[in-house]
Image (cartoon, rainbow, N blue to C red; front, side, top):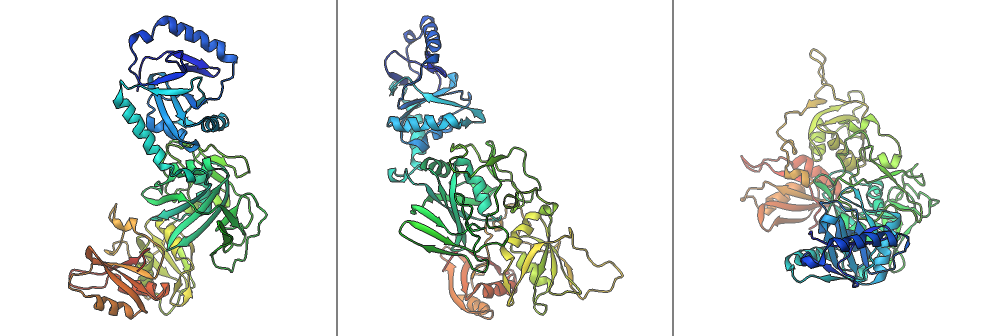
Length: 561
């Protein structure tokens, strides 16, 4: 929008004045007689006269200092967390806007909030103050512009949900397509930008990583939900689905890698031998009894906030944290602005960086993993190639000659290695719980020519046709899930019956369920009796020839049967 408007103001700067009545016309269709130089001079004088006068509370809020390219969609979200916006006027040529709320309390909340935490639009500071006008009046002469404004208002308002949700402080966050590891510290990094976080509880449900996050006030929760719902934490993956929780309070019992009470840092870390569990206490209260990590406990956190201007976290294989970081504080009553941003732009690397509160080590970019506690009789390089190949393209595998329960696995990319470590560490394989950790080696060396043959303990898979991620943009990249009892089968010939597939998998455990995809019989889901059985079946049956031209593809699924 643009237009020729008269200029008036309050003590913090000029404000557009359409008339001497307490109404501002929303539109650009004013006739020429409304504007003349005398009026403009008078208004300029009025600005000076009002410099010492405090603006009275009004349900109309005045925003100034907007960038010339700002749109309705850029500005309206600034007010959405504070209440229902009934009307909006953007004056592009004046770098200003007006926002009318349904009542004065909502407008007052917005002005008070942004007095301490100045909002930014397109990387430019914006000034927020009360208008000296009491309402905005729609200009019926310009229905097209008004329609656009109302559409933007309705779209933004719809995100906020029903009126009964306006006072909720707890968000439920579900992470879909979690290609990279997400933990409680990464969630804190992202959400602390919107206000003071009091508590976080994380858990896994239906093979999906989830969290409940309690803010100190509803404005922060609404702002975080409006801005982050549907956003990817990393490029093309780790999508956040955010809704309000039905809980009214979170009861955190331990401060550890699964749960945190930032208002009570003296909580114990809990028993490290206890597996994750979520129990429900009194109605509306979520309690956490979650496994602890030795040494983590109540260690102070240093986490990083976001700078506007980017949309995603960078690839976690990067080695250094960007210089544009801000510190997010968890001190009660102190919080970053709860303003919707054009992007939350965290630059993070090495999934443990925030937790450790220290510079990342060079191993963050390493592609080699050390795998230990293997079954020496059952595990071969091919077994490890198939298993680790679920999470990245395996280049080389070496089972150590003098310690055959240990192996080195070299992945194609650092984030492949990180992903494999995240999902396969402590996995039960052939009855033994394997451990996966970054190796001090940066490459797996092949035996030199002329050296004694190592009995096939070292294999090079660089040119293997079985790599799942060799094609950029492959759908395999969007369907990476933790080991589960349910397996996804694909590339099934149309003439292969259900019973044949069930018999094949029954050799590796109990088949508890099976179903073809209703619209695509080339794919199916099969449920084994346990995760360990599913792992064995995947290792043995992935790439199994079902016909001359069809080799079975097997991967872990997040679905249930």
